[in-house]
Length: 374
Image 1 (cartoon, one colour):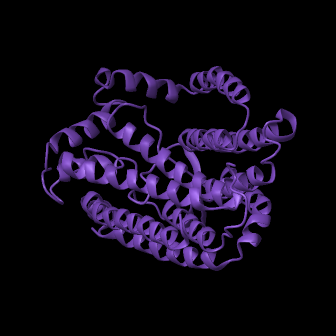
Image 2 (spheres, rainbow, N blue to C red):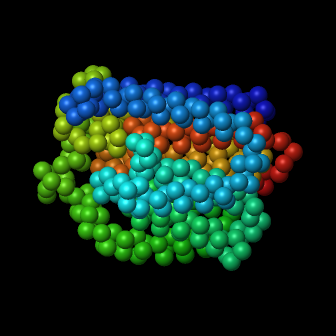
């Protein structure tokens, strides 16, 4: 792909993200206005907070866009370790705060931040650095694959401690796809995945609420007013949309029927208000996001830039698939937001920072470097 075509694809990629953010702002207000007015006295409370996150994310995007790519690359181990330490602060009383039973938030001077979002971003950058550095050693178990697997294991354990099972699963799936693209031995990958199955089963068995989620997933109607309430209300919302939806801002499920309607289950409100047609448009946007992102990545000659861009695009796509799968009832609930759409300042800020990194990669690649897949 010529340089001009690469930039054209980048502009298309950015336009998709902007469209998703605008859709998110519309439906954050639509889904949260009643809840915000009743609980907080302002119908646009969450919209205003999301706009603050958008502003901060835009600033982060611009700063990272113009940072030297070599500085980001060689600083990635230190950035990753810093984000690990920041995430660990969530376990300290007085700093970390439990919401819905998970210690994922840090509150300092009234400002709340979810460090796992920054950890997720720094992990992808650091993994891209390691894959680029070890691209000729990944076939070796001890020198290439094991160090990569160890970093993933430590990060996953920290996320599971919060607990944030959904983020850990998302990072693991993304990492194994990157391992595959980096030509790690298929045997190593298969053995690891096979050994993870009993571990996942044990993690589920150790926590009663995870067992309950599995049982609820299998038959939510066993407890329609308890553990099955949320997914049932989500399915009612989606089913009520029919072909063209009940109309913008006309959702009935947002009237305190569907919990987390502006965060984890915002897709259900979108489906209710815009119907099958609106849902398909949103899904098409994320498919185009995947296509454009991977197309851009395939043109980047620097291995670090290639793995970073591919990793970020895969991470967002996998998180999207998991979120929508939960909303439509084909996966147990995991507490994952819909990227660029759901309310959440930390997620939006970090996602836009990653977009800034991708733009940086596109504008700082040299065509004479060897492509990572050759």
